[in-house]
Length: 148
Image (cartoon, rainbow, N blue to C red; front, side, top):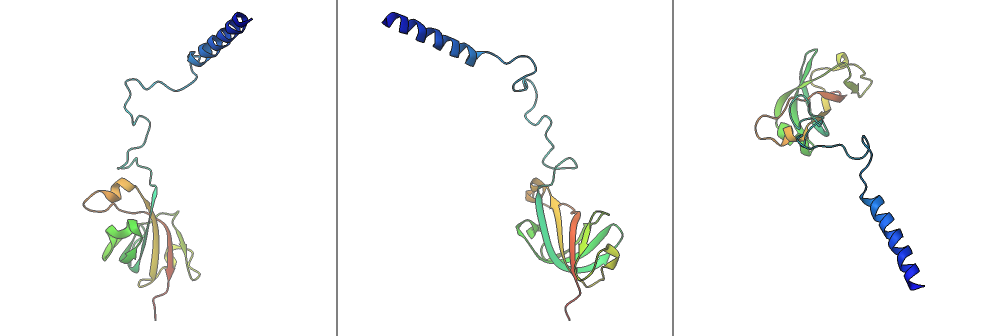
């Protein structure tokens, strides 16, 4: 009796082990990365291919405007905006940049001297790198008339 139980247990165990060790069929399972660099298929952390994941918030006064950029005299910002504090910076704008505040809907509605809050996206590695901070492209601009 004990021999039969032992043989059945041994057969069940060997069946489970063979299923667990078996390789997946071709085209299934994890892709093979032998000989490929670790960053294959991933965007670089800096440069034109990086994917911006950090929001930079800057507060200041609008001191200049063109069709492609706003010049803002930055007075404060969030943690990622520290590199831009206490200086005048040019911030790029696109057609997708949203403008809000006191009935303003377009970039043409902005007036020099307006108080602005600019939200932009940047790559974390570029913000942490020593030297000149990267040029920002605004996602949203919230503007209010100059304080009286």
